[in-house]
Structure formats: C-alpha cells, structure tokens
Length: 190
Image 1 (cartoon, one colour):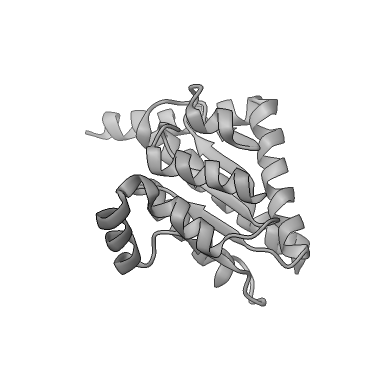
Image 2 (cartoon, rainbow, N blue to C red):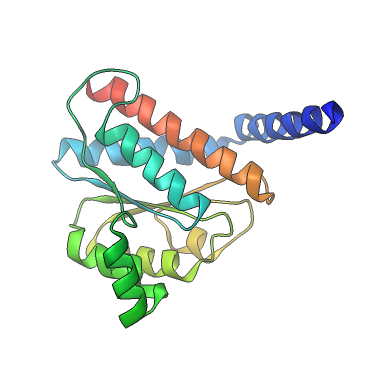
C-alpha cells in the first residue's frame, strides 16, 4: 500500500514539475493574476464557476479572497456562481442546467469583471455557455482546464492548462493555481 501512496505523490509532483517547465502555463497564470488585480483596482469583482470538484475549487478560491488567505485584510468581492442552490435548481429545472451559470452571469456580471471558469475537460456545456456570455458582456474570461485543446481553451481570453489529463492531477493543479492567485493578489493589494 505504501508503494501506491508514494507513486500517487510522485505523480502529483511530476505534474507540478511540468508546470514549472512550461513558460506558457506560467505566463498565462501571471496574466490571470494581473487581470484579477486590475479588476479589483477598477472596483470590479471576481466570479468563478465549475461543476463537482471544480465547483468546490471555485468556492474555495472565492472564500479565500472574500474572507482571508494569509493575512487579516479588507474583503475582496469573489463569488462562486453555484452557491445559491435554490437559484441553481430553479434555473436548471426551468431553463436547463446548461444555462445556470450564463443566466447568473447576466444578472451579476459587469464589464471589467473577471470570470474564472474551471473544468477538467474544458468542455462542460454550462461552463462553455458562461464563458460565451462573459465574452459578450466584456468580462475577462480565464479558464483552468486539463492539457488537451478544448472548447474553453478556444473561447477564453486566458487559458491556464494543467499538463495532465488525469482528473485528480488536474484538480490538484487547479487548486495550486487558485492558491497562487490568492497569495499574489493579497501581497499586491494589501
């Protein structure tokens, strides 16, 4: 059993090493951070969306920014679009699950905001529709996806791809990207 644990840890380390070696990933992560910082400086906000584990990552990142990450500070507006379960279930029932995030974005999003769309596959229809709506509204669209070309990576202004297709390794990369974002934002703004 220890061999399996060691292998899984080494697999995770290998993906993180690939991130360090990939200038495109690092540059796009930097652009993502700068986009959110610029939005906050303009008085805009960060919105996030995802499904399943990616929804948990979206909510986690939003909590770190709206609450606190490493320091006591003023809160920053960050919200995961799925947190109102009555809204999600009503819209899914009445308009289809593929519209739950795009419809909320229409209500909540403003030009100059940033949307971080998180999807391991990069092809989830409701996330793709949210990015399409964000682009229409003048919201900066950032996606965190797996390594393959996807609908999201084609649509987003900034695409940060994990160098893996293994769902667990991709999700580990995404929370790393989120923590990097939170830490740099805190240091730059406070």
